[in-house]
Amino acid sequence: MDKVRIGVIGVGGMGYSHSKAVKSLADTELTCVSDTEKAVAKEKGEEFGVGYFTDYRELIKSGLCDAVIVATPHWIHPEVSVFAFENGLHVLSEKPLAVTVSGADEMIDAAKRNKKVFAVMYQRRTEPAIRKAIEIVKSGILGEIQRTLLVNPDFRPQAYYDSGIWRATWLGEGGGVLINQAPHGIDIFMRLGGLPVRVEAKTRTKLHKIEVEDEASAFLEYGNGAWGYYYTSTCEGCGGLHLELAGDKGKLVLKGEELKLYRFSQPVSEFSVSSEDMWAVPEVKEEDVELPSDVAAGHSVIIENFARAILHGELLVAPGEDGLRSVEFINALILSGRKGKCVEIPVDRTEYDGFIEEMKKTSKPKEVVNVKRITDPRASKSYRNYSGG
Image (cartoon, rainbow, N blue to C red; front, side, top):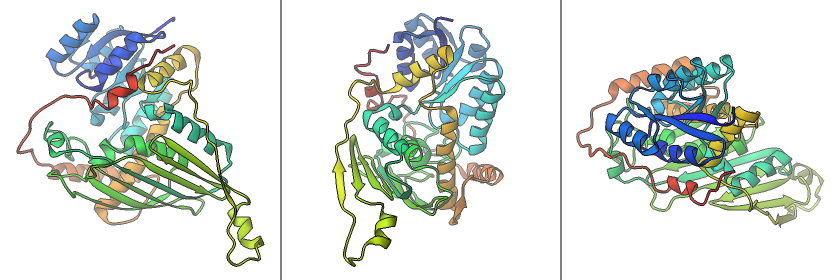
């Protein structure tokens, strides 16, 4: 196999950009597309000169591809992905993997059972500041993590929520900001700070006319006794990402694309017992952080890495298994916020499945819907100035 033949499932939104990327990369060939809207499937198929389908099962069983990119709404990711694995195809799934941890479990189990490559579209891992942050944490120079923080607000107007009958509903999305807008920030948080073992969250619908949360905050507890804090919403006009990891030997701060590293002259745990000066504090030095400047970033890097994993066994930048951590965190916060109780991680699968089914029963049809399928223009930026290779 010289190239990986790829089919893209769901081309009315981000899948269209993925299709263009597949055609441009050296190790991939776009061979087919599918979309539930026949006009969209036909239009994109003819534009790319490839076969098109309205039923993903027909695409998967067509023999036209070795792998698929699943760019459907997230509630159907497990169904599509498991069917693809069971029919011998590799899978790259958009985020989040699933609405529920049990759905994500099914995807991971099917990939392992059929010995197929499974990746998730967490393209922010390829950004220079994130790459460097991962490298710093891996090196151990921060020492044992004592505290974590992620404040990651966003904004969506009511028009966004009114653009689809499924948006911000329990039946359609299985949650609000946590499962739709927050997963990329959560993935970075989980990748750097690790998965907590217990959360106590508060969620509410603060600004919008929707039935799910548009704001969430949580207190976190980790296995080593460390504490953490998390916040997100779609209610702030000036959003962004602010992440902190405070360790025994140093502190890492990521704000937007700016990364800062602080090193202590002596581990805090040692300094606390060795210093005889009652007002003393460890000497802190900010170290220069040189970000990689010669690396590509964005969706195309994940697609290319996925193809090379299939062709050459290259290690995945974002393995499907990593996607489970984000779903664990999301489910734990939603359940804790709605039930008003602490929730242990791993999340109780049976309890969460039952909770989601209960919430679906409360879901009501929207009174006002102005249907639009328009990809966020900010998401498309990651495809610009990418040469592949």
